[in-house]
Length: 320
Image (cartoon, rainbow, N blue to C red; front, side):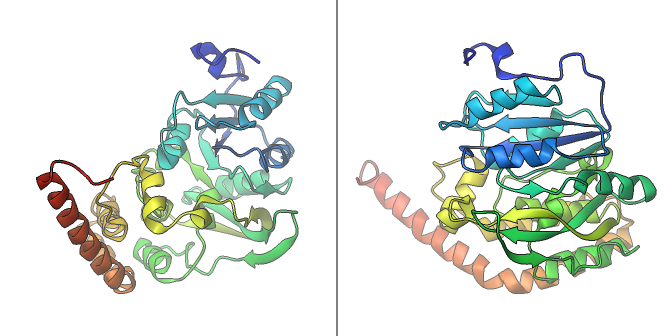
């Protein structure tokens, strides 16, 4: 295996390759269980020219070995190994910053794409110049690739009014599979990308919806894996929030409050006219209603944590 200490050893593939229309970014951390299946499904995409960037967030399992093997065999793959774990959202965001194609999509390291998924999304965006994102329906699968559920869009993401799109995205209960859609990179880089918070991908999708309609492809071309090793199922909300932030040392955690603050920022920095921006702020009221109690709990817990920290400080340091 090539040495890890040299910068040149951290990337493989794409040397001298012309820029294709699509870059797929696959962030991964200790993903050995399903990574080969995910890579097989991505490299098996047909009727589309693309490159695949795999960002390994300093894995400690066989992820590096798997990625280097695939990159050596396929010049469409670029393997990037982080020198240390930079956090979930930062790893996602740097994939965008390191991409070069006019269209970009994230892929899950435990998901599968049916062979025509990428081509169908690219066709949809090229046929709808105003659209900023194209996504497909999904089948939920288990650890053995067996179907256990399905997901179909229920939001008015194709509506011409950006406020209508935003209202549905914050008020309709849905799994955020839009984040695995194909996105115009020129629009994506104008956003805040994934904020370093729990549900940062929801803020990003809302921000994209304020910039243009989406295209819904009602075909189940994404196979999204539900399994107990997913970070959202392994840890509680406070630990999950810290993992998203890449800051495990934070003592005071306000995940719902922070989410609301980022939604506000998404609206305030949108390219809407002032009157539409005011409408968009008002459209956040369903989110505020459903998060009022969790935010109150955040603040109450923060008060308790602050009091404990103050008491520990007065005693000369935290108790063991």
